[in-house]
Length: 94
Image 1 (cartoon, rainbow, N blue to C red):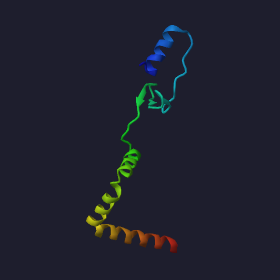
Image 2 (spheres, one colour):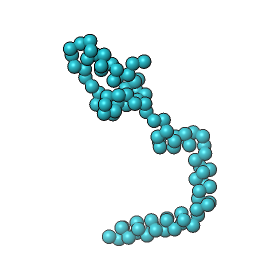
Image 3 (tube, helix red, strand yellow):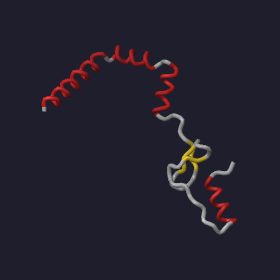
Image 4 (cartoon, helix red, strand yellow):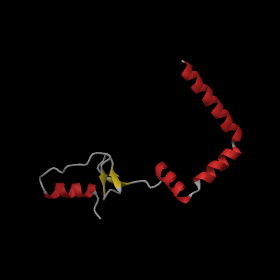
């Protein structure tokens, strides 16, 4: 399969028209990648934070992991919630 970089060079070689280059961040390759600053199509990373959260909810592991985290770090979560409540109370009085 020919990528956008090779297509630009083939177009320049066989025509006198200047090709329209995609700007950085433009979807390419059937929406499975994005153009970089050199007009090369780079594949999209499947392990982005949002996709990892989506996978966690699809498997059903998130709730059990969250409950386990709370049980291990109970004192820390109580302390942080107390500090957050005091901070919000202070802001509301201002």
